Length: 273
Image (cartoon, rainbow, N blue to C red; front, top):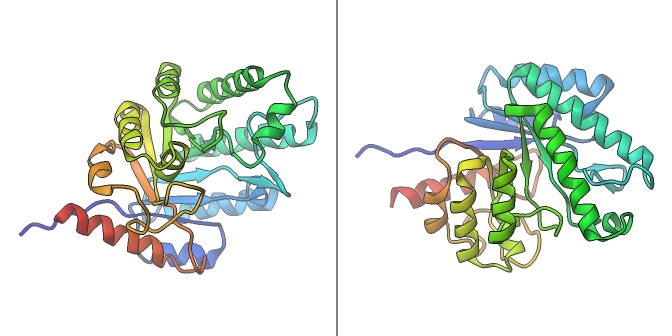
């Protein structure tokens, strides 16, 4: 019997011990999970060198924009007037990361929004519509700037998410290149596998990357595949075969990607059956 194999996608920070733990498994896709120190100065130089190192294993590399600076979420929608320092960091780091991705012929992943500070972000604008309009204007700018080297990931924030037909069709009209996090869409739709599957179908043409991660559908739990309530037997055939993917799982030990490998084995066994 011919063994059907699926690509192995792994994620790590820039710490050498994490990097080498992942690379020993020779992943087909590698995603850097970055922090604020990785996008400027010595950190940026180290990142550039590590990208070249990873290229010895795979050319399919994704740079995940930092999630936080200090204790603040890195929100594209940050108000330039109310939070000028955060706004400056978000703009400069995003442009730096996209330019690095273009220079290295790899991908930059930008989060459209996070959920933790959504009410605070919206409160800095006149109303929700103004806040969301500002967000999409900035995404339009970064899509034009990054072209085929940038993608936008969904969250469970009301500002930018996948799962509802209205929002999905609006996003398709925008023409964004998308990174689809399965758990975020599942949670946003209150644990509905039907809604998750419908969204995967609708958005497939624009999806270039997946975060494969399970969930109970109630909150952000980042479970190993098979440990949550996502119906992978139905969901996996709906993934764009031309897109890349990684397993974005909460690890017991950040220096050991065991739960990612367990997720890969689960999916491999599922499709073979």
